[in-house]
Image (cartoon, rainbow, N blue to C red; front, top):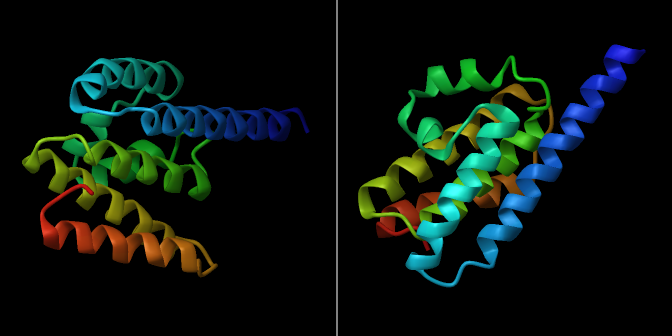
Length: 140
């Protein structure tokens, strides 16, 4: 029972953190402010999960899956929030980074689709939106 409570607390902690980071990202109004906030967001993410945006983007899909699978607190819902965070970051990244971030977000969402037993229309729409952004070559 204690183990289950601990895992639930970790899931809630990661969820709360990523939602807070998404909120922080939504308040950014320009590239200069993004550069200042990026370090803070990365630091908070690393402190709580050992991950950074650069690490997530730079590792292979298999490495990312291996990083996220054993981490307590990273449920499919939280991985989807992490994909949302990458998409939010892509709005302010350089062109090469945009494509990498969006590709990693799509990978995470498709991974969730394959592994989970439920269909999500919202997730499907996110995937199509990201694919459209990639075709247009922008994070927006």
